[in-house]
Image (cartoon, rainbow, N blue to C red; front, side):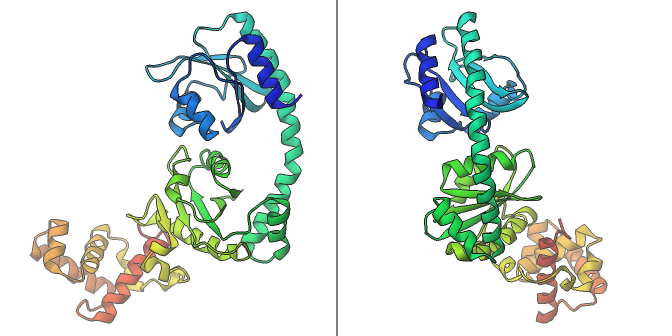
Length: 357
């Protein structure tokens, strides 16, 4: 038994449309659509995945926890649903969705539940069959990102069906319960390969992508760093850029939630500068949030006392007092260009390395 014939057969037996999703809520198969339909069902079929806000709503209803058919109430925009989990023992493999308007009789619900158990065996077979190829593919992605294996690029191109075009690497940072599902959704939405690492996720996307569209696929607070498009054999360089851009997006105000390598400005220049290069005077200054804010604002505004006073809503006399304290603590002269440049770059470097929030 395969998925599409099984879904079509079930739809005929119960007399209403059926839609099957995997555990990441991506559409795997659906029957002919007749009878009541809402925008959620229509968009799921057209886009092959459920919109983020709808996923959140259905998850809040308990679809990931239930072991039995679950009725999800409708609203003005969304028709009521019957969700039947597709499980093999305790392993959740997907969901059978039916529009519950009019409400399904219990005899049909029992029939759907029985069919879900049969579909679970098909999905489990597919997962196990894909497991070996997925592991081989992910090992190839890891080696490509490390930049030390031309054979890995060949595996992705020839065996993985990846197009021979420039690739863009994206790095995603966020909660561990959010990143994996978003990576899978992005993989299905775009021509991409993904890799989950300890503190971030990676997407290797064919061609150029709109990072904002990728960000929208994650059901939670994440930041995205984007490298420059490069040949697959040079993906490691795009990856290094994306890692750096993601750190900037997570640590520097104004760059979140999406930062591209090309837009990083001075933070791009600081990519290879270690944290111990921070001016020792700035290290001492970090203990005073007030003085750090004053100095950074003053330097960002090209040393203009008038503009700094306005920005901080601070009397000019108070500003001069704070700047004098900065000079004393850092052992610098704010009237000299070299000292001001050293302090300014050190503040940016401190932000980049998480020393300054």
